[in-house]
Amino acid sequence: MTTILHPSWVTTAVSPAHTDAVRLLREYMTEMVDRYHRRPARPGEVDEALAELPSDDLAAPTGLLLIAHHGADLAGCAGLRWHPDWAELTRVFVRPAHRGTGGGAALLAAVEQRARAAGSDRIRLDTRDDLVEARALYARHGYVEIPAYSHGPYAEHWFEKRLS
Image 1 (cartoon, rainbow, N blue to C red):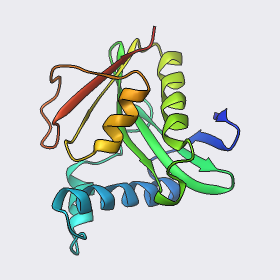
Image 2: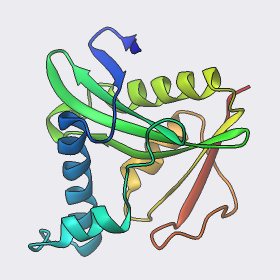
Image 3: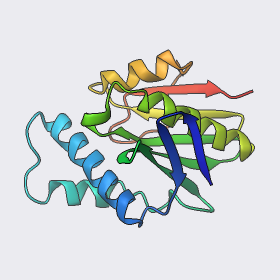
């Protein structure tokens, strides 16, 4: 199913093993490693991070992965993990060349639509302290900080948005 929520942004659900998904998830993780260490990733670090935090559960029946195109360009991704009554947002990424063009908002709208359709009443997420742009995006779109619901090694802020 393809979703068009902004005239120039189109999202499509794909397997995490899809060529475009693999490319985007590697770029996402490279940026996460670079920012966390405040230096370029060293050889093997991105592969280690991908192994530590795999995305293969972002497929039915445990989750969903959306890739986004901005015009003809592969431009971003976002994933959901299903929990009883709620969904967990993860892997929100917009390629640098497409930032500031509405991609974050388009991805959030698409995952929220998919979560509602799946019967989720809210979306939760955790994020790191250094991802200030992500935290600002979530706040702008109605996500509010909540007490910790997870204990991941990089979870420092937790957000939730009610979908009803």
